[in-house]
Amino acid sequence: MLASWLYLHRATLAQKGAGIDDAQTRRAAVEPSALSLFGLVQHLADVERKWFQRVFAGRDVPWIRGDPASGFTPDPERSFADVLAVWRREVEVSREICAGRSLDDTGRLSAEEAALMGSAAISLRWILVHLIEEYARHNGHADLLRERVDGVTGP
Image 1 (tube, helix red, strand yellow):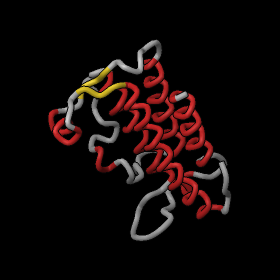
Image 2: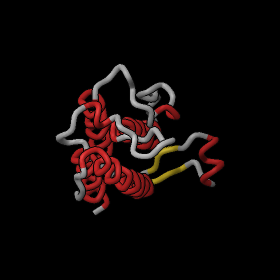
Image 3: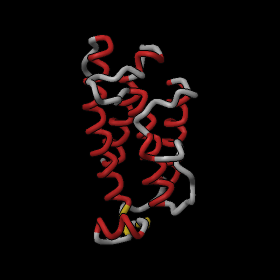
């Protein structure tokens, strides 16, 4: 059930950027915020990498953008198609990491994050629920961003 909900939210995000051009995906909805569909997809690629590769699998992989704080700012060197491809690869790696794993299997947070969370061990169940929440929140943003671009609403 958790994997299905996450799949739905991932598919919803991809649909929000379908059928519009690169410039439209970079358009911010409300000043002074720079939040855009482009930025959301970039951010969620790093979110996938962080929680599944870095935390759950314990891999020492770099942030996609180099600085996670820059994730919402559209990368001027990439097209939206490039960013979608990166995000899709991260999603696929996340699925591979989770395949055959128990929801009770755990990953490890950094010492700094563990201090905030109260524990260094984080279960796959917790990560999946967190990612569902993260995507649901950002899909709400994506709904408004897409409506601002061309009036399209809905799933």
